[in-house]
Image (tube, rainbow, N blue to C red; front, side, top):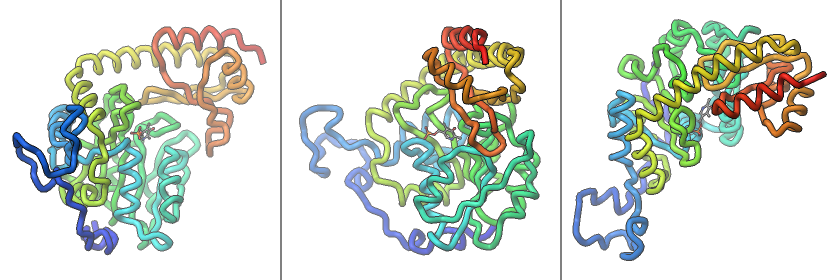
Length: 345
Ligand SMILES: *Cc1c(COP(=O)(O)O)cnc(C)c1O
């Protein structure tokens, strides 16, 4: 890896971050007259903790990542955007990512005026590190790897990802938004080994909290400190911090949800794969799967007419005639299957 101060943009290295009242005084006091808050309307009259210390402690305990290595953002999308703003000089640097993958990497690249270099997976969605590394040059700052990948559902082979981590001189962002649905080894457990790695997690999927907008980035303390300097001071509001603490305390429920979803995933995939108009169901390690049909648009339109919405991925590279189907509740899944069994092309 190149030294961090060669990877981070010079203006970010030089940045003197904003210090808010809740940064300057962090203890407990009886009288708080430092932040121009209203004394009425407790508890929401007070600014939230800008460093989300209690929540990081709770996340640390369940994800086994040291608190100082955790960044919390307004969804993973905030961490993705920060990676661009911290590392990529607009109009000069570039990033490399697998294709197809999560759309936000490219959107963030475009917003930040950073060249985005997509590298296609093989036709069975398998991944070769060498092909990806060949697309990098001296101005490549970030590589994005999503595993399990969205929209394809598959895990990238562990050893191929390690090859990228070990050979690439810049930062490798590994998006593990769906890792709770997989039994395989995660990269967040290998943080200490790879100083050039940023791992993304989210409250939006297994933890059932897409509405409160919290995503995590795990990385070395150096990288996390820079992200913290660049983020909006109060990027996670008090309501979201409280709700996030509550869901972590309900860890048992989350495990139960994940187990039900994994069982339903098998049922759905088995049932869809035997439909006469389904030509392929792709293997998955996530809470969704990709399936190919004779005419995906027609199946999609029919399902809409039945009040069931799936995601049409037909126009995505390598995903011609594919629908991405999220595993829902047992009742949702039963309705989907009942509708699909009645489809006539
Ligand atoms: C859903 C998803 C996320 C979650 O994004 P949030 O902003 O945290 O809701 C992140 N990465 C991938 C690949 C996803 O599919």
